[in-house]
Image (cartoon, rainbow, N blue to C red; front, side):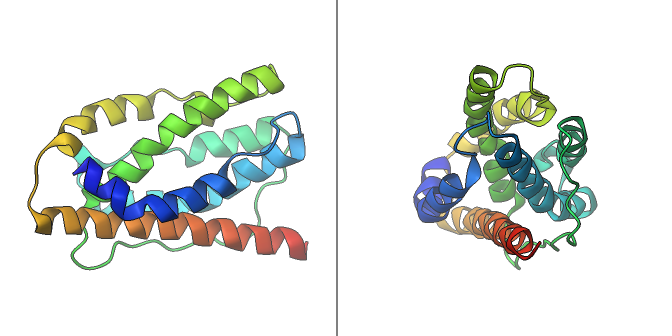
Length: 179
């Protein structure tokens, strides 16, 4: 499953990675922008997860940690509306769980950079360990052999999550430019 999901979403993943981390965590404005984009993307996603996702595939919520980081870093709180999220018909929430849990790997690398470039900067979101535990619990399901139909359902969900993040990041950039 994991190999299929990686291959199927590689292009979206590359685009999101390019938009993700700030060039320098020492730039407080860039870090605040990163936090605000993450917050905007995760709110709608976490709302859907709370209502519809099976408990064993529900990633730990991160929006509250992002809100805490925004406040602790003196960042302006995003004022644009939350983007709605829903999985398409036939999608398997395992793909959603894979995208969100897999993002912790990038978060760990960003945390190391943040601590190097801006020691002491509040980073509850990047430092949270619940997602790492969720990833470890999810890995056996991701390493299992699955049918093409099962892989397709998970890929539909993964693509929807990547597209949601990309749309939220683009909307945030538009709001920031308009402000």
